[in-house]
Each structure stands twice: as structure tokens, then as C-alpha cells.
Image 1 (tube, helix red, strand yellow):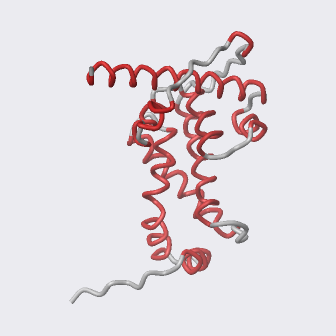
Image 2: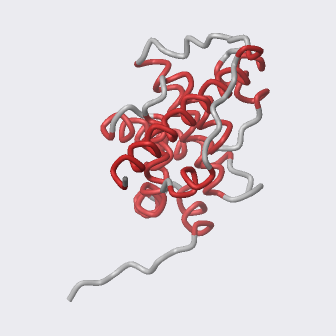
Image 3: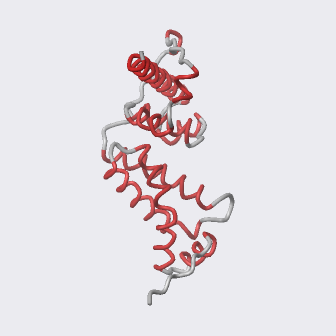
Length: 191
């Protein structure tokens, strides 16, 4: 007969992790890893890289877990660590984040048909985001998905707020162009 361990709340697991219980770390990892892998996948170039980011992130989580004060959700706290871990990983392993502050005055964004944008599924949009260059992808993810301000992004990435804004603008333009291309392909197939 197999015994199942009782499911513990996140707060119980956090307390047990602070006390150094390895089994609690394993349970916490199993509960949060699928969501956090999704966070890492948005920054990574492939699944293996995302898994490395995830592992590095959880090492930090367990190393800093005693610092968690209970302000806000624990999952949100872990998510921020994962984002920072992903950025740190990219800095170490890629010659990236060469951010250019483009002049937005001549930057006219294409208009996207609302129907085309609404027919796009979340997984399709995430795939389009993955095609952005690393710098654009990082700024877009930090701002549009993870909710960081341009000021926070500037500090995280070591760039100016203006560079963050221009990177976001360019990323949006590229994504809109890609959505328009997808929409025209769908129209061609339907017609």
C-alpha cells in the first residue's frame, strides 16, 4: 500500500523550508516549477536553457527563502526571482542586451486589425515573442508581461529609461508586423 503525503499550503511549505526540511523544498519545487518554467521559457531561447534558468532560480529561492517577509504572495516573490535569474543567465551566457536607443520620431507602428489580434491565441503570441531579438524580447516581457516599469527595467538591464521605451516600441512594431503577416496568410488560405 502506497502512502501519499498530505498536501501542504505554500505558507506551511515555506516555514518548513526555512527550517531546512529537504522534503518541503521538494514539494515546493513540484508545486511551483511548472508555472516558473513558463516564466523562464519567455526569456530562454529553448527549453533546455529555460530549465537551467529554473534550476538557478530555485537555488536562489531556497538560499533566500528566510528573507521572504510575507509581503504579497510567495508565488509573486518567486516569480521576481525567476525573472532576475533568467536575466542573469542571459547576461552570463549570451553576448546580448546590446540595447540601442532608437529615435521614435520616425517610428510609425503598423495598424493591426482588431479581429486579427483577437483571433491570435496566447500560445501563438508567445511564439511570436520568442522570435524577437533577445534585447527586445527581454524589455517586452519585463514591461508587458511581468509588469515592470521602464525605470525598473533600466536598472535591471543597465540601460536608460529612454532605451527601455524605445526597445518596447520597436518590439511592439515588430509584433504587430508579424500579426499582420499571420493575418494575411490566414486570409490567403481562407480565400
